[in-house]
Length: 297
Image (cartoon, rainbow, N blue to C red; front, side, top):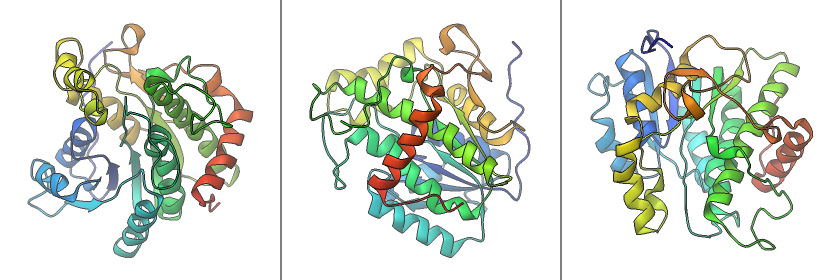
């Protein structure tokens, strides 16, 4: 497969990228900035976000800004969405990139398990709160780890099951793909021109395990992946492709190579569970109940 780096010019287009202060999110912001986009870096730490923003093309020209949001907190998500709507007349692309992997068991301030709260529920709420302002698309970030994952909507807090960090991560990533499919169905039914698309970065040397609390896992995330994974800018290309290329709704992009670990952007595979329409509808209902946010369509 031929390499793809031909990102279309993006002048006049506004992107919000969550988790943009490091890893894949930062590289996505850098690539978009280099193509003339206006980028809002939505970061949990405004201080780290500002330091990262200084490395993004367009920052000196005022095209790159940082806004604080903790997607694991529904109150923070609501505050970010309200401030964004007050400051801007619209949004072309929302990139739901922020995520955690391998976190120890914990329930956040909303009583939701950390992986599910960060990787799915916060982005579910953010998307629906911003949806009236979105002009082009929503990009949802999945993972190969959704395959083989179980989504137990009756035990999202892991009260009946023995907690497994990677099981919780896989569950949240399966939720991402079910959300992607159901969101695009709802947009299509409403006659909206907005589309939902997805991407995953394959094996990429990012910092996603930095919040695991496990020093071995954190070391692997920071250093070990560099030996066997793509550089972060390569992994970010799948997200950029999904965010900028003319794709049909519900497309899912990942690396083209063996097991979708390495390579250039290409259509990615989904597990049978990720194509379960009934499960997607039930997840949507549970997500509305947990977040208190409904689809505005």
